[in-house]
Image 1 (tube, rainbow over the protein chains, first blue to last red):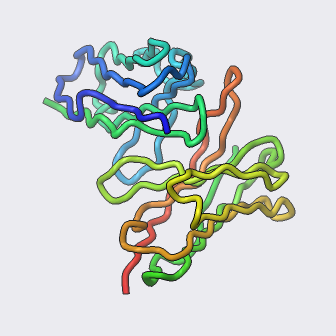
Image 2 (image 1 turned 180 degrees about the vertical axis):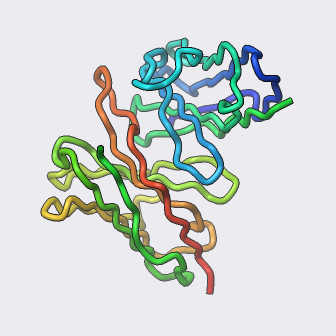
Image 3 (image 1 turned 60 degrees about the horizontal axis):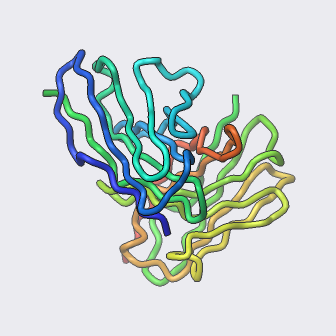
Length: 107
Length: 120
Protein backbone atom coordinates (compact mmCIF):
# COMPACT_ATOMS: atom_id res chain seq x y z
CA UNK A 1 0.00 0.00 0.00
CA UNK A 2 1.07 3.58 -0.60
CA UNK A 3 1.34 5.45 2.70
CA UNK A 4 0.33 9.11 2.80
CA UNK A 5 1.75 11.35 5.52
CA UNK A 6 0.49 14.86 6.17
CA UNK A 7 2.09 17.65 8.14
CA UNK A 8 1.33 19.30 10.36
CA UNK A 9 -1.39 17.32 12.14
CA UNK A 10 -2.80 20.53 13.59
CA UNK A 11 -2.41 24.06 12.36
CA UNK A 12 -3.57 27.24 14.10
CA UNK A 13 -3.98 30.37 12.02
CA UNK A 14 -5.79 33.69 11.81
CA UNK A 15 -8.41 34.72 9.30
CA UNK A 16 -6.65 36.19 6.24
CA UNK A 17 -3.47 34.15 6.84
CA UNK A 18 -1.84 32.15 4.08
CA UNK A 19 -1.41 28.52 5.08
CA UNK A 20 0.23 25.48 3.54
CA UNK A 21 -0.34 21.81 4.29
CA UNK A 22 2.13 19.19 3.09
CA UNK A 23 1.43 15.62 2.01
CA UNK A 24 4.11 13.03 1.27
CA UNK A 25 3.64 9.69 -0.46
CA UNK A 26 5.73 6.64 0.36
CA UNK A 27 6.39 6.15 -3.37
CA UNK A 28 5.83 8.16 -6.50
CA UNK A 29 2.18 8.73 -7.36
CA UNK A 30 2.87 11.07 -10.30
CA UNK A 31 0.08 13.66 -9.95
CA UNK A 32 -2.66 11.30 -8.81
CA UNK A 33 -3.45 13.22 -5.67
CA UNK A 34 -6.63 14.81 -4.38
CA UNK A 35 -7.35 17.09 -1.44
CA UNK A 36 -10.57 16.99 0.59
CA UNK A 37 -12.06 19.27 3.22
CA UNK A 38 -14.18 17.79 6.00
CA UNK A 39 -16.25 19.62 8.57
CA UNK A 40 -17.53 17.96 11.77
CA UNK A 41 -20.42 15.60 11.12
CA UNK A 42 -20.20 16.01 7.35
CA UNK A 43 -18.83 14.05 4.44
CA UNK A 44 -15.57 15.15 2.87
CA UNK A 45 -15.69 17.52 -0.09
CA UNK A 46 -13.14 17.38 -2.90
CA UNK A 47 -11.17 20.59 -3.42
CA UNK A 48 -8.27 19.68 -5.71
CA UNK A 49 -7.61 16.74 -8.05
CA UNK A 50 -4.63 15.67 -10.11
CA UNK A 51 -2.48 17.59 -7.61
CA UNK A 52 -3.31 21.07 -8.90
CA UNK A 53 -6.69 21.14 -10.66
CA UNK A 54 -9.43 23.03 -8.86
CA UNK A 55 -12.74 21.19 -8.55
CA UNK A 56 -15.69 23.08 -9.99
CA UNK A 57 -17.25 25.45 -7.49
CA UNK A 58 -14.24 25.58 -5.15
CA UNK A 59 -12.94 29.09 -4.36
CA UNK A 60 -9.75 30.12 -6.10
CA UNK A 61 -7.99 30.81 -2.79
CA UNK A 62 -7.39 27.03 -2.69
CA UNK A 63 -4.49 25.75 -4.77
CA UNK A 64 -2.43 22.60 -4.97
CA UNK A 65 1.01 21.78 -6.25
CA UNK A 66 3.54 18.99 -6.41
CA UNK A 67 4.23 15.72 -8.15
CA UNK A 68 5.96 12.45 -7.42
CA UNK A 69 6.05 12.15 -3.64
CA UNK A 70 5.61 15.67 -2.27
CA UNK A 71 2.51 17.81 -2.50
CA UNK A 72 1.11 20.95 -0.94
CA UNK A 73 -2.29 22.49 -0.43
CA UNK A 74 -2.26 26.26 0.00
CA UNK A 75 -5.07 28.52 1.13
CA UNK A 76 -4.09 32.03 0.13
CA UNK A 77 -6.27 34.00 2.54
CA UNK A 78 -8.11 32.02 5.20
CA UNK A 79 -11.81 32.63 5.56
CA UNK A 80 -13.91 31.63 8.60
CA UNK A 81 -15.52 28.85 6.55
CA UNK A 82 -12.11 27.24 5.89
CA UNK A 83 -11.54 26.02 9.44
CA UNK A 84 -11.92 22.27 9.01
CA UNK A 85 -9.88 19.09 8.61
CA UNK A 86 -8.05 18.48 5.34
CA UNK A 87 -7.07 15.13 3.87
CA UNK A 88 -4.89 14.19 0.95
CA UNK A 89 -5.64 11.00 -0.98
CA UNK A 90 -3.70 9.09 -3.61
CA UNK A 91 -5.45 7.40 -6.50
CA UNK A 92 -2.38 6.09 -8.31
CA UNK A 93 -3.24 2.54 -7.31
CA UNK A 94 -5.51 0.38 -5.21
CA UNK A 95 -6.00 0.46 -2.30
CA UNK A 96 -6.71 4.17 -2.40
CA UNK A 97 -5.21 5.70 0.73
CA UNK A 98 -5.65 8.91 2.67
CA UNK A 99 -3.36 10.99 4.82
CA UNK A 100 -4.14 11.11 8.53
CA UNK A 101 -5.59 14.60 8.24
CA UNK A 102 -4.63 18.16 9.17
CA UNK A 103 -6.96 20.02 11.50
CA UNK A 104 -6.98 23.74 10.75
CA UNK A 105 -7.99 25.73 13.81
CA UNK A 106 -8.72 29.39 14.44
CA UNK A 107 -5.97 31.17 16.38
CA UNK B 1 -28.37 16.54 -8.89
CA UNK B 2 -27.04 13.11 -7.96
CA UNK B 3 -27.54 12.16 -4.31
CA UNK B 4 -26.33 9.16 -2.37
CA UNK B 5 -28.04 7.80 0.74
CA UNK B 6 -26.74 5.08 3.03
CA UNK B 7 -29.12 2.82 4.91
CA UNK B 8 -28.80 -0.07 7.32
CA UNK B 9 -28.64 -0.98 11.01
CA UNK B 10 -26.84 1.39 13.35
CA UNK B 11 -25.95 -1.38 15.80
CA UNK B 12 -24.33 -4.71 15.01
CA UNK B 13 -23.33 -7.42 17.48
CA UNK B 14 -19.72 -8.59 17.60
CA UNK B 15 -18.96 -11.52 15.27
CA UNK B 16 -22.06 -10.77 13.18
CA UNK B 17 -22.32 -9.23 9.69
CA UNK B 18 -22.62 -5.54 8.93
CA UNK B 19 -24.83 -4.82 5.92
CA UNK B 20 -25.36 -1.41 4.36
CA UNK B 21 -26.95 -0.21 1.14
CA UNK B 22 -26.31 2.98 -0.80
CA UNK B 23 -29.12 4.30 -2.97
CA UNK B 24 -28.19 6.55 -5.87
CA UNK B 25 -30.78 9.04 -7.08
CA UNK B 26 -30.57 10.58 -10.54
CA UNK B 27 -27.65 10.47 -12.94
CA UNK B 28 -26.10 7.59 -14.82
CA UNK B 29 -25.45 4.69 -12.46
CA UNK B 30 -23.61 2.60 -15.03
CA UNK B 31 -20.94 5.12 -15.93
CA UNK B 32 -19.14 5.18 -12.60
CA UNK B 33 -17.38 3.12 -9.98
CA UNK B 34 -19.00 3.27 -6.54
CA UNK B 35 -17.06 3.13 -3.28
CA UNK B 36 -17.42 2.49 0.41
CA UNK B 37 -15.22 4.50 2.78
CA UNK B 38 -15.27 4.47 6.56
CA UNK B 39 -14.11 6.73 9.38
CA UNK B 40 -13.76 5.53 12.99
CA UNK B 41 -14.77 8.15 15.57
CA UNK B 42 -12.17 10.89 15.74
CA UNK B 43 -9.94 9.21 13.16
CA UNK B 44 -9.11 9.36 9.48
CA UNK B 45 -10.61 7.90 6.33
CA UNK B 46 -10.18 4.32 5.12
CA UNK B 47 -11.20 3.16 1.65
CA UNK B 48 -12.96 -0.20 1.87
CA UNK B 49 -13.51 -1.02 -1.80
CA UNK B 50 -15.48 -0.27 -4.92
CA UNK B 51 -17.76 -1.82 -7.51
CA UNK B 52 -18.57 -1.16 -11.15
CA UNK B 53 -22.01 -1.73 -12.70
CA UNK B 54 -20.71 -4.98 -14.19
CA UNK B 55 -20.09 -6.30 -10.70
CA UNK B 56 -16.31 -6.00 -10.93
CA UNK B 57 -14.86 -5.11 -7.55
CA UNK B 58 -11.67 -3.87 -5.91
CA UNK B 59 -11.09 -4.31 -2.20
CA UNK B 60 -8.68 -3.02 0.39
CA UNK B 61 -6.41 -5.98 1.21
CA UNK B 62 -6.70 -5.13 4.90
CA UNK B 63 -10.42 -6.05 4.76
CA UNK B 64 -10.62 -8.26 1.69
CA UNK B 65 -11.23 -11.51 3.55
CA UNK B 66 -14.34 -10.06 5.23
CA UNK B 67 -15.79 -7.70 2.61
CA UNK B 68 -18.25 -8.13 -0.21
CA UNK B 69 -19.49 -5.20 -2.30
CA UNK B 70 -22.30 -5.88 -4.73
CA UNK B 71 -24.45 -3.88 -7.11
CA UNK B 72 -28.12 -3.90 -8.13
CA UNK B 73 -28.39 -1.83 -11.29
CA UNK B 74 -32.17 -2.29 -11.48
CA UNK B 75 -32.49 -0.33 -8.24
CA UNK B 76 -29.48 1.99 -8.66
CA UNK B 77 -28.06 0.60 -5.44
CA UNK B 78 -24.84 -0.92 -4.23
CA UNK B 79 -24.23 -2.73 -0.98
CA UNK B 80 -21.56 -3.54 1.57
CA UNK B 81 -21.28 -6.70 3.66
CA UNK B 82 -18.61 -6.95 6.32
CA UNK B 83 -18.45 -10.21 8.22
CA UNK B 84 -17.14 -11.12 11.67
CA UNK B 85 -17.22 -7.56 12.94
CA UNK B 86 -15.45 -6.36 16.06
CA UNK B 87 -15.38 -3.08 17.95
CA UNK B 88 -12.63 -1.94 15.55
CA UNK B 89 -15.27 -1.83 12.80
CA UNK B 90 -17.23 0.86 14.64
CA UNK B 91 -17.21 3.84 12.29
CA UNK B 92 -19.16 6.21 10.11
CA UNK B 93 -19.61 4.47 6.78
CA UNK B 94 -19.79 6.63 3.66
CA UNK B 95 -20.72 5.66 0.15
CA UNK B 96 -19.21 7.75 -2.62
CA UNK B 97 -19.11 8.10 -6.39
CA UNK B 98 -15.80 7.86 -8.22
CA UNK B 99 -15.71 10.34 -11.05
CA UNK B 100 -13.07 10.46 -13.76
CA UNK B 101 -11.04 13.65 -13.81
CA UNK B 102 -8.21 13.90 -16.34
CA UNK B 103 -7.68 10.15 -16.39
CA UNK B 104 -8.06 9.31 -12.73
CA UNK B 105 -11.03 8.82 -10.41
CA UNK B 106 -11.81 11.03 -7.43
CA UNK B 107 -14.61 10.85 -4.87
CA UNK B 108 -16.76 13.72 -6.07
CA UNK B 109 -20.12 12.92 -4.51
CA UNK B 110 -20.62 11.41 -1.05
CA UNK B 111 -23.49 10.21 1.01
CA UNK B 112 -24.07 11.85 4.38
CA UNK B 113 -22.62 8.84 6.17
CA UNK B 114 -24.16 6.40 8.60
CA UNK B 115 -22.79 5.55 12.04
CA UNK B 116 -22.43 1.85 12.74
CA UNK B 117 -21.59 0.73 16.25
CA UNK B 118 -20.39 -2.78 17.01
CA UNK B 119 -21.43 -3.69 20.51
CA UNK B 120 -23.20 -6.41 22.42
